[in-house]
Image (cartoon, rainbow, N blue to C red; front, side):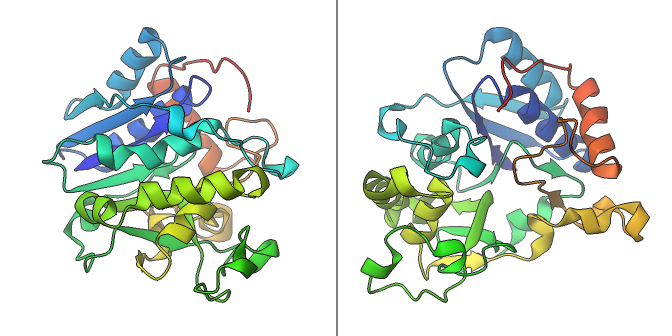
Amino acid sequence: MDLTLTFDAVYAPHAAVVMSTVAESNPGEDIRYWLIAADDVKAAARATLAKAAGPNATVEYLQVDTSPVNLPKGSDPVMSYLSAAMYLRLLVPAALPAEVERVLYLDCDTMCTSTLVPLFELDMGGVPLGAVRDPFNRRLYDMGGIPGLATYQNLDPRANYFNSGVLLIDTARWKECEVTETSLAYLARHAHESRYPDQDALNYAVYGNWLRLPRQWNDLMAWRLEPEFGGKLSDSAVIHPAGPVKPWQPGFPKGARRDLYWRHRRHSGGLTPTARR
């Protein structure tokens, strides 16, 4: 299985947690990580990430020119916690070796709770990516709509809108469909006014050309899986506590999700972020 994460020094400790949860939930699987790290991620952090990946994993760092993604983080002050490293995911497919036909991108605030193997056996039907519809912004026009929506006559405002925290990528089709180039062109026009910049751009770039995955692959409402509500976290394969309050912050609710994060944070070496974001 080929996986990718992109991050800066602030999110490196959380990337280690993601990798640790993947190792625990996929025992015995051969995993290859293709990481893009910002320049501020030092050697000690990279060593911790390699340890977190587990004994059956290899870790490679992709070399990319980051100048095309030196972009604004968006206009919404509520989303100020976002890292500019979010744009690095757009650079992954072009940087991968030709042998990597499919790669799974995971945000650094996700946690894996069950096997990922079915995603690598799924027939993607020739689309460049698979993703889960966002439960909070279900349509392109929700929450004010993606920037420029009214000017793009080819877009149906009622079309489904996906969350970019988990992306199943067919690397050849991504490149054939020029997803990176189309996303960057959209961002050049709208990054300064976007709510969720990389996400808005990707929804624009693959409009009508993506596979909707079941919620279990990017569960943004995983509080419903807490044992106090009669569930268990492994009922979904990837849980994603999106939003400004994260499991590593004091304001995050106590429970199984917070406990899972801190157990793996301790196991992965307990890197300390350089700043909170």
